[in-house]
Image (tube, rainbow, N blue to C red; front, side, top):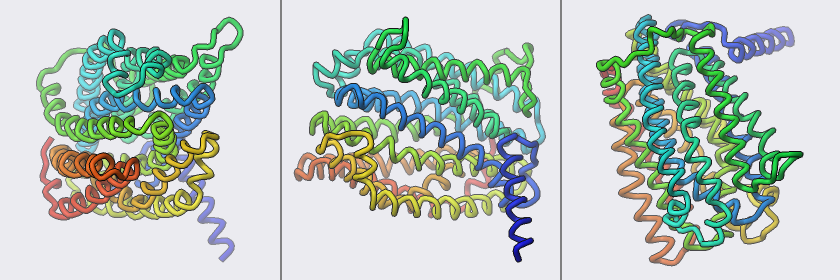
Length: 469
């Protein structure tokens, strides 16, 4: 029995090593459990690194002022619209690259990768112009108070102005994931966020010849870190050993590939614009209750993301498995991959929900000593954690639709759950009936539960198996 346990541990360690080092695998055959493990491990580590940075970032920013934390919350609620476009395009990139990879069409995968990058650059330039010219107006529109705007507009200008680093980091990593090279995506994000963590205190508080930029320094550090990672991604695409291998002659506009990309990405962009615009409006409602409540909410979301990111990593693994197996003509294997991943994700999220419900006030006290901030942040974390198991199933199932290239179905689900349910419910509960922040927190959790219920129902119908991309 002991020998078997030892052998099992050695096998797991060997698989873990292969996963993080990016050992080449064919995910359309063999053990599904192994395939999920090999893809999910680097994706989970990738997302954990992102969430660790988010926590470290807010620790540094919280040492400046409550207004600084609130500025981060307001700016990131606007930046989520950039994320919406980036993630929507990345869904299409993962789906199309995964499908071409499953079909053993390397040339088609390369062509898709180039068009993804072209489109991302054009969109990010437009957003940069707006962010550089109108940072104060953006914060004012979001309900920021005059002193908050005066202190934080530099953060908004730098982060939105440098959004190309966010856009390309998302998109190129999506290309790697679609090809099954999840470890490359993991290492580039480790580079990005590792630099962020090092540079954050230097630019926020100053060091030697570098002045203290305050909250603006956090944006500078983030942009430098992500920009460095994007350069490394491009080098890997042209000179690395991954499945996507670009050469200069690939850098041409291919209308048919671009139109197919846009067609698939519209659903992905639509679903995240719906979700993130809902998030913006929720932040606007929260701003009615003052900077302390807003700061507590912002910190709670950062803590929550620490565990949602690994779940997101598992759901990304599902998207790749679904896309590649549909490309290989194995829809039943694709479906089985979804249920196996959902189970793993639900177990993880269920354990975390218990920890958050019990220890939420303690976690919030690590980031702020303001009683009102801790009180509202802890309440937010506890209410959201109550729906974590539903979050797990919802995230995996929604990503399985996207991985198949069916980005329309999640768009309809988001429209119903966010715009028709979450926003009206949050406003009525928080403002009309006077329940305050608890009305917003409850609306978020109930909407995610509804997404899981509708998503599972539609997934079982199986229409996603017939999507052609």
